Image (cartoon, rainbow, N blue to C red):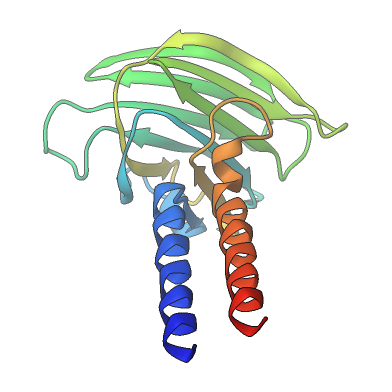
Length: 212
C-alpha cells in the first residue's frame, strides 16, 4: 500500500509542477536606480510572449527637484545592439502625465495619452491575436480603457526601463507578467489550483479504496 501511495503522490507532484509551468507567470520588481538614467536597463523575461496580460504598478518616489519622468517597456530584444528594436512602453511623469508609446527604430507613436490620479497607479496591458489593449485602474478599482485593438505583432522578450537623470529617490515598479488574456479573470490563471484539487481528490479516493 505504501508503494502505491508513494507512486500516486509522486504523480500528483509531477502534474502540479507541469500545470504550474504551463501557466507560469513572471514577477519582478524593478528598483528605482534603473529609472534614473537614459541608458536602458534590460531584464529578460522567462520566455518570449505574444499572448499575455501584464500588470504594472508604480511604487516610485519622485525627486522633489527638476522634472522627473520615467519609462518602462517591453521589447523584442535581450540587449542593446541585438537587432532592430521594437517596443511598447509606458511613460509617466511627476506632473501625472501618462502615455502609452510604441517605437520601432527611430519611429515613435503615442497611442494613448492621459493622466493618472493615484501615485501608486496600475496599468494593465493585454496582448492577444496581435492586438494590444491597455487600461488604467481608477479610484473605484475599475479598469478604464486607454486603447483597444491596436495592431502589435512583436514578441515581448525583455523588460526595459529608463528615465531622466535623478528622477526618483526610492521605490520600485512591480511587474506581474501573467498567462491570462483580457479581463480580470482567466481560467488559465486558476488551472494549477484546479488540477491540484482534482489530484488531491484522486489521492483521497484511492486511499479510501486501499484502506476500505
